[in-house]
Image (cartoon, rainbow, N blue to C red):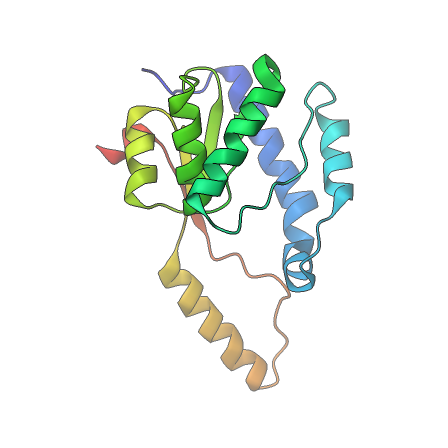
Length: 174
């Protein structure tokens, strides 16, 4: 199975990254702190890709079984119109991966998940999950402490600190 991006997909990847850096990242910390969902981002996404409908987030309380059930419901409701899932933590990724695999949709539905546990890594190796966005816990701790020390010392600190992630695909596991 080849997961190499075509020229068109590479162009889309760049467009999505640029959008994320321009529209999502600058207010991410504020939205997180306020526990606020920003509908404006979805409206801007609709302008960028008018043929793609982005569904409202489904909250599953970090429960694998509930994630699987909700993913099954989405698969049933959306049918052939469903092109992908973005589960934003490892337990949600596990549940979505189970639902997609059970439905036999690993070749037609793209799953890009966040974090990494053994189940997600297994799904990545099997091609159920196409990519994992993996955080850098060392950098998170180091930069978090460094920023705290600066703030306590009276220095100006940024409202958002990018601690980095790694996009991991099946071929990266070898």
